[in-house]
Image (tube, rainbow, N blue to C red; front, top):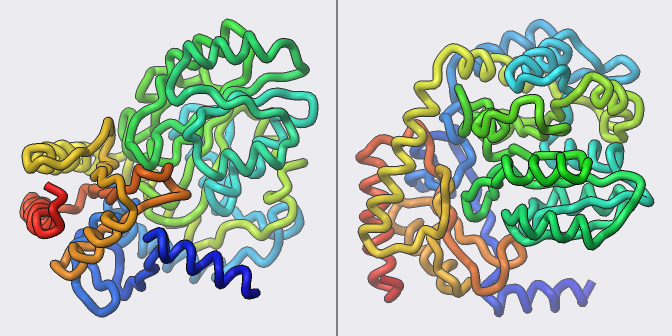
Amino acid sequence: MDFLREELDAIEEQGLRTTIRTIESPQGAWFVVDGKRVLNLCSNNYLGFANEPVMKQAAKQAIDDFGVGPGAVRTISGTQTLHNRLEERLAEFKGTEAAILFQSGFVANAAVIPVVAGDGDLIFSDELNHASIIDGCRLSKARVVRYAHNDPADLDRKIIEAGDCRRRLIITDGVFSMDGDIAPLPGIVEVARKHGCLTMVDDAHGEGVLGDHGKGVVDHFGLVGEVDVEIGTLSKAFGVMGGFVAGSTVLIEYLKQRGRPFLFSTGMTPADVAACLAAVDLLDASDERVRQLWDNARYFRGRMNEAGFDTGHTETPITPVMIGDAAMAGRLSRGLFEQGVFAQSIGFPTVPRGKARIRVMISAVHSREDLDYGVEKFVSVARELGII
């Protein structure tokens, strides 16, 4: 394994080695990391649901009622009433005919893309789509054509240039996780209609964030019923674990027959499913957390911009603090941690070379005092390093 040691040494020299820290308390605005209490500015816990008392109680009750695991794959003896209830509730929440659960959003993409497209088909994929979409496309064996990021006009050209094939599928993230920008879904749907293409949206960072009561990017644009396949995650705004596909009844029924992760891997645990059910109920009942999330995001971004930081072109609570050099981004992250702020640096291959950043993730449970503290420490450490 000497070749792996050489590769690790090269990663280290380029300032790209990731420091994996250990969390020692529940997720929240503040938590304990490597023995130190720090402000949490990098979790996907948008709504604060990861430590929500109602959801914890639901998970505990599910363990008492159903045990800790389903015991088998869903198609044999692993489907519990909780699974069916959550799938029904998610379909209602998303405004689709049906939904199916998977172990994660990543797995959901790996399951559905090879079912919808295969050898002899064409997939048109945004050039900045998530790694799970890229891997799902590879599994499909369809030919993949990348179109310019968030550019329906280029998508239109690429479809015309590609010519005829058996089936064409357009795939885009709803919210792009590293930059925080939103896919121009109305334009993409218009192009799809023009050329008779299927459409698929991975709404991992839109669930619980965009749309009425956090129903996602499709609802945000008033396009419910106009997108063929919607992918959602339950591990970000929902605060738990898992993923799902929402769409037509025929799509979901076919996935139950041919979706390989559904057929060959044990489903979600009762505790996770029950907690997700409680999360859907909370979102249905009130959009207060969603509104607070957006208020916090606007406030933090405004203060960071006033301080001289470049936050890119974000349109969502995802707030990239653009640094450029990976080694410098790493030094900023370590300096922030020393000052009581947990905000991890992100570099290649997650983002292109020369585009390293600190990706700040704002939550509804941050107070104004928390956000002011974070800005103050960003300014202090960045000035010491000559960034601003």
